[in-house]
Length: 499
Image 1 (cartoon, rainbow, N blue to C red):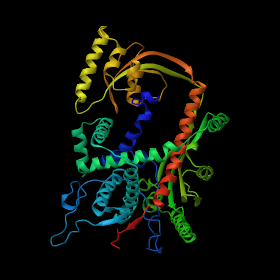
Image 2 (image 1 turned 90 degrees about the horizontal axis):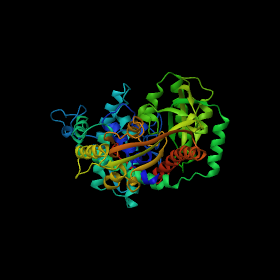
Image 3 (image 1 turned 180 degrees about the vertical axis):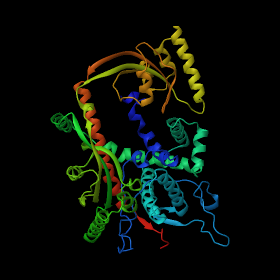
Image 4 (image 1 turned 45 degrees about the vertical axis):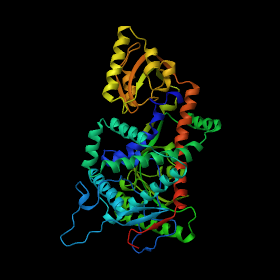
C-alpha cells in the first residue's frame, strides 16, 4: 500500500503528531498527552525533606503543553501579568542548558500559561506554579534534545513543508488558516511561535521514525505466537482504565539514586493511603508525559499494557492502587479507575465488507486554493456523470496521488484502511456512484465505488493486522527506552532556581 499512502491511516503519522501540539494550543477537549508520541521524563520534584541538589542525569518531572504567547506586557491572553508600579521586571533568563542550546524563562512561562488554562478547562486542579514549571521544563528538555539530534542527522523542515503541515491542521479542525490563526492568538500565542512548535514536532517525528520505527522488525514467529494467543482467548477481553505515576531511574543510576526514588515512592503510597488525590500527586511528582493529566493512560487492552502492569492490575478493584512496582524505567504506582469487557473481533476471521474504490486527489497549495480544488473536481465529476470523460483517465491526468498511474484504483479496501473522512464518504456510495468532492487531511478527493463484497478476512489479512498491532506495541516500548537513553546522555544544567 506504499503507493497509495495519501488517503491511508499510515499517512497520518505526521498529522497525529501535529494535532498533539494543536490539542494544547487550541485547548481541544482531548488530553494532549494522548495525542503526542509516547515519551518519558527524569526525576520529579523532591518530597518534603528530600535533598535539593539535582542528581546527575536527573531533573524535574515531565509534563505536557505547548509553547504560547509573549512575556509580560507583550503577551496576550488571560495569563498576562503586569508588574506593579516601581517593580523591576525580569525580562528573560536561561532556565536550562541543553547540550549547546538553552531554554529561556520566556519559553517556559509561555508553555506554563497555556498548560494552566488547559488544566482548568478540564476542571482539574492546577499544580502550584513552581511545580508546573518544573514538570514542563523536563519535557522541554527532552523535546529540545530530540530536535538537536534530528538536525545533527541532517533532518530539516523547510517552509513549504511547514505550510503544508499547518494547512493540514486547519483542515483537521475544520478551520480556515485565518480562523486557525485567530484561535491560536486568542489563547495568547503568536502564530509565529505556533509555527515554530509545529516545526519542532515534525523534527521529533522524523527522528523517531529514523531511530525507532525503522528499526522495529516483526518476525513470522512473532505473528504466529500472537495469533495463537488470540485464538486461545475468549472473544471478549478485559480493558483497563488506568492512571500512572512514574518515578524515573536513569539507566546508569547509582545505588543511592535508586534508593532515593524508592523512598519517594513509599512516601507517595503513604500519602495516597492518607487520602491524597492520585491526580494531584501525579501532576506534582510523576515523570511520565501524562503527568499533568493526572497520570491518566485512558482505556488499555491487555495487549497494550506491560506484563508488569497487567499482573498488578488484575487483583485490584476499581479505585484501588498498586504497590510500588520496579521496572527498568524506574518505580511505578498504578491506580485502577475502572475495567470493562472489550472485543477482540478485529483479529478474528469474521465476515467483513470490502470496497473496491478509486479516487482523484487534488492537493491545495499556494498555486491552487482549496476552493479552486473543489471547483475543478466538481467540473470533473460533471463530465464523468455526463459520460464525456472517463474516471480513470481523469485520475491519470489530474490526481496527485500515487495511484494516478493506475487510474486512481485503490484496490479492495478493508474497513479502517483509509482516513475517517474518506471512509465515511466511500461507505455512503452505492457501486457505480461518484462522490461530491471530499476534503481529508491530504487534500480534496473524488471517490468512485466500483464494487463491494463480503468476505472473511483472509489469512494474509489477519497476519497483516497482527503485524500492525505488534509493531505498534514494539514502537511504543522502544520509543520509551530510546527517549530515556537520549535523556541520560544529554548534558543538562538547571538554572530554574537561579543557581
